[in-house]
Length: 280
Ligand code: SAM
Image (tube, rainbow, N blue to C red; front, top):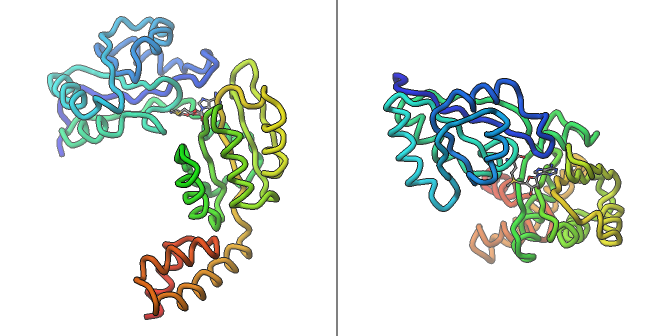
């Protein structure tokens, strides 16, 4: 589709250290006439630093649909607009997806101004395999759904990256130990680029004990990077999952049989199901 009107700039901002605001981000923020911010008060400091005098509008998960329509109208009238979130890269566990989708659908140009992202910053210092990784964002807040999600991920062989909050980090680590086993290698990155930056490496069991025993290690913002399941162990789990699935699918609806086989074996339900389907 032909590109029309102004440009939507998706601008990454610091995750702690204000010196991480790039010269290009400053230039773009200073040049646009409208800034869509997750929280306009929170972004005031960054916008002041960039010398931006742009009009500000709030764009958050509760108003994104309506706000996206209004912002796209302004893009179509030729205005340049910047999207920022409270910290880091917009759309990464942050609002913005609907706005970008709407702008692209309307034929408007969308450009990134890349920069800080907590997940990538943590991965870059974790020292865990980084050629292939999966970003899982936040786990469910409630224990049941959280353990269920971890069950689904237990067989994943790629490095896994999670965001976590200070009030759940201890409980989440305990659940990781329960579902992934205590031996799995992991790295807990806390307060990256800030005064109390701490990067702890060890087994899940060691990290869980350290966080449970030291209230200081439960303060601030966290990224947990977890090594993938060893390929051999993953294969054994999948073989076990398919064996259980084959036994159960004569007795139960296939989806339920696959869910139970995944919970029993720790393999992914999708992979078990795919194998079961091929066999038919
Ligand atoms: N869009 C952001 C990004 O690009 O990283 C992430 C936004 S998400 C709502 C906020 C979460 O990111 C925090 O709860 C924490 O898990 C992680 N996070 C953000 N800043 C961090 C920092 N300085 N150190 C460690 N984790 C951080």
